[in-house]
Image 1 (cartoon, rainbow, N blue to C red):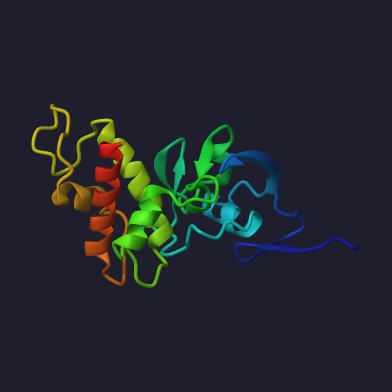
Image 2: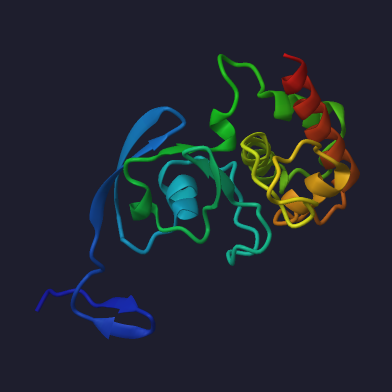
Length: 190
């Protein structure tokens, strides 16, 4: 017999893993992929589409290096199955800028030294974009004094709490907070 054995979870089987075709909209472009249903959004981005900005740090949703935006909301792409995101708009670090220009948060990270090795930077920036949108929409955080009132001040404590899901092993937090503040103040001034 010319049947192939496929190893799945350490067991031999005569059946290959099943695949499905999905259509994803990423950074304003449509992509059709044939993948196994268990492929994470992170692996679909990196391994199938060569969008390597989002990083595989912990692969457990604890570090934030894989953060992307789905319909404008922060998403840990290592914890999400790609098949879940048909019909949504996914934005990665590669899609934040427009017309060859950096996004204001990308500019601020450069100006404020919001990175050292750069490994966590794409996730930090995508998370900051989503976090600022949450703040502008009046969503409270764990340090918001009055959760029934609209949050009015983006204090250092608010920034730190709202960005606490994104870790930086180099300790560039002072620059990260300064960059977020600079981008926020620039957006408010416009």
